[in-house]
Image (tube, rainbow, N blue to C red; front, side):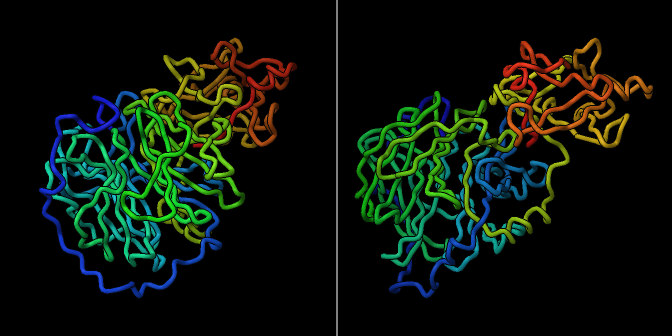
Length: 465
């Protein structure tokens, strides 16, 4: 996470690390925590995030959760509302991090910051414990240092050699540039003195680790609005060396490394600047190579308005229990097949596809209800204007009030079929003009006969969240 003034912390934050008073950590040999449960049991993913929309109509600084079976397409839980919100410090969070501990339970960390008050300079981070992410308990803040500077984007890792967890976070060193710090803890209650974990000599921020990959540890971070990596055969502070090429899509921050549970692929997620945040993803089959290939946006969909995510693996049972506890969304969003950065929305009652993100974001939320003229079909009910539906008029799609007539019902009913350009996606055939399908032309939606390859792509959508 980054202040809007530049890629790193404010240059005026020049404080000496040697001045920090610390909380003692009692380490008595290795911990009797046992071995971390095998990843072989994990078959799904959970994401944590906060929300900001384009014009900040959805700016919520509580912990949000989403789940996925493939780690690419995400379903928000709790109607994309927070599952918990901090009650101390700034009263909000940014940059949440979820980790399964050695005993199989979870810990959640987050930056103590609400909104864009970059000068807040909290020395604390938010912490919760959880057995299953359905209930978050033991809320507290822990102090990482005594410097008049921040503790941003905390993450944690298990350091087997120390028998302790490391907590890394972004802060400022004695020379006034951004570095990644580390404290150690056995219980996420008390922490050791802070140390500089990685300082390449220039501003960096937002560290994320992949530990023990073929004997190597990888630390990705933000430098100059790009995501780059460093690596080390140990986890010792000061041991990491820069090595990778940069990944970026415009001004990019907040890297998250995720390994596929079904292949040898790794994914690197990044986030563009607040508040117009969009996630982008890159893929690599070899972390040691340090090169990344941009992932086709057709393959992934971020939770609505999500910012600076964390991704952890979970079991099928945990996935099912999370959905049962928090519920799946009562709405959907529709992504264009051939313009996957665009989503179906209504604007001034006209149905169209526009580049995400935009506000009001509720214009892109739809309830797919049984067809008004045929319950085997589907009608698109607006979330923010629930008495209005998409209907065609002179073949153009518009958002209009249901007048209760048979004509309106027929115009507002469509039949969902396998996608004309990709059978894993969806297309929608008009109920009363069955040779015509919903498609976009000039980014505006209408119903047309479909024949060409371009027509088929224009008429294909992904129904997600």
